[in-house]
Image (cartoon, rainbow over all chains, first blue to last red; front, side, top):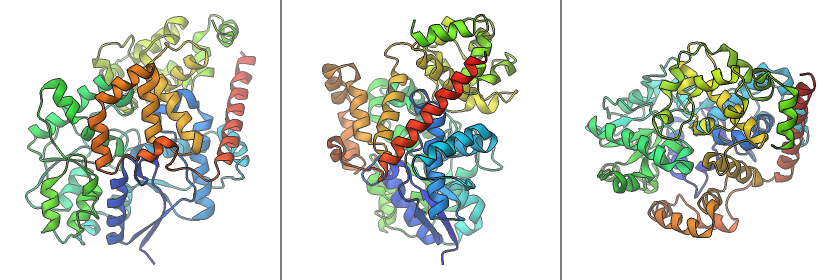
Length: 298
Length: 213
């Protein structure tokens, strides 16, 4: 039996062929080393993300999350839900909080769930993968399996918004969270002093208001270079995509020469645990992390 | 004015604050705002052009009864859901949710700005996600690019082709999704029934409040 078991909520972007599929690859490798068993919630659905607020209204959004709660509860009883995506985690946590504090919303949600043949008894705890690592295991446990420390490599820990606000990781400050820096150091890397670590990448507005979002992304990348970092590290699929895939457009628009790889914490951990480039999902980086590819091949 | 807009304006005559409290998600928190302006200074999109009124102005305008000006404003649609305002507010006002709530209410009344890009994204995202229970990223992107017609869509797609090619090469963009392939829930029928019921119950709850107004 694994030392920890969770009902896993991968979210839409982590699926095979989707925009964060390499996140999932590296999370699976990392969890294998750490002896964490993650079992996908059967037939889970989209959380609605933040941007659906206008079309969805309130109750339909909670109903979507509640369906996942009910499926987790009945199929994987007693297990906490763990999400890897910041938006999935936030959406689910928000719905849990709202339903637990509002009897009317809960009653209406149960009535809606009945239409899908489901119901909720107790909403499971909802954790982000980072919480599992830090709170359920702890930095010491995360350090034990390190075979190949990322010595001499400099990373800017870009925390972004939704793993940090409004819930955040327990004990961390909203203005200067340090957990990502600590994770980088745990696997032997150097976390550079980085002043844009909680700046918003624009989120969904990277689609609808690209100029505004890209102005923010420019600040985020520029500050990472200024801090001396070679790569950016993030816990969020949308932060990862936004800060990575628009660098070419930003270069055209602003005359910059950005070419900074953007990694997930789970990719660093997989590599430090001795995993291959493939197990770390490095082939999924649009801006290839050549230094890490070489490191993995050694 | 839409029919619903007329009805609501008549029901809550001269009491726009009450209307927001009862009809917009988290609207009952608006009266807690003490006009310090920390939210406005914390907002990442406040520093770009095109922002009519930052949150604390919107809240004061609600109290001042500026119904038309608030509900037709583009301000709420600038929210990136970064929650900076939310965590910094000294009165713990859930500003992010209120901005979403006012936006949703304006949209429901037919007063949201026409062709507002983030409103369009919200519609497209939710319809995409709920069609099969999971997001089809390729179709989502296609409908966003082609919102202003075929010509504009092709131009946009050409501008974005390097981004798309990079993602295809990294196996993070599945072309088959364009043809309706990709990921889906099994119980799509159950999800649709559940959402129809949720929508019905929410409308009933809000109508009940208006009836008591």
